[in-house]
Amino acid sequence: MNVRRHHISGIAVAAVTALGLGTLSACSTDSAAAGGTDKFDVVASFYPMAYLAEQIGGDHVSVTSLTEPGQEPHDLEISAQQRTQLEKSDAALYLKGLQPSVDEAVTQSGIKTKIDAATLTTLEEHGTEVGGHAAEHEDEHAAEDEHGHEEEGGKDPHIWLDPVKYAEVAEGVGKAFEKADPDHAADYKKNTADLVAKLGALDTEFKNGLAGTKTKVFITTHAAFGYLAERYGLTEEAISGLDPESEPSGARVKELEKMAKADGVTTVFYETLVSDKTAKTIAGDANLKTDVLDPIEGITKKSRGTDYIAVQKANLKALQTALGTT
Image (tube, rainbow, N blue to C red):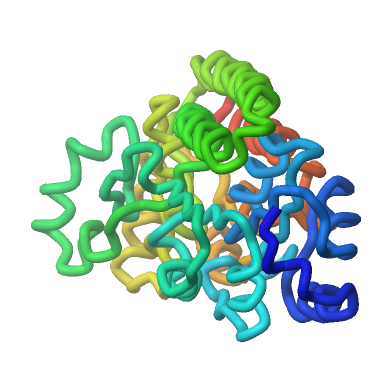
């Protein structure tokens, strides 16, 4: 759709793709490789945004992701080639606050349609403890421990792990697509409604599946599942904060081991894109099991499913097993 992109040769686009613009589904792969098509070009910051663009855009969009499958999104640094791709696209879909390099590149770009998912729902302040009974203990923990939960907190960008919030974002993206590409507005509207329905069904599965668990507390590598915990009456205790690379204090590790025993925690969850060393050390010391709870920041061969919905269902099963269904 963007007339400027017709000046790029197929070879140039292929080179850009090889340098880090991982293409996604069949509908985006062919068009992205060909270049110069009449499709609505969308650059997505990472997988959850790309999934929305593909589901809502359908055959009318060409989606490329700035984050390659298997790459930790928080660590992404935008290359010159990727900045060029941004300029040639019709829309950028990103989540401000998750990837500073992307935020800067999108802000500086001349791209006409900039869709910030963070503006399409409500972001909350989350620390290393989030969920059903977190509020009761936050003041107490902060007073007792100088390495308190709030130190690791901040605006939590992991909204896509809550199906309800993700559906809110989907509705906003759909409206943005309708406005930017009015010729296909009816299809975008229908596809958005279909996706929101799927996410609504997923929400119901989680609600019913986690309603009668023996314990409500689970331990994760980093604080990615706060929104999910709040949605379904659980409490996430994270080893580190919102940054997956941050190291926990010795006091935090001792606190987790004590809490695990008191709350009947059976499992320490780790994720595929971040080292599992700390999770396995804590699990070993506290005689707990380990399992994967996937923050779905990218789909790889290690993922327990080929798309967002499938991996979320695998997450639900993992939580049911760890928390004990009654």
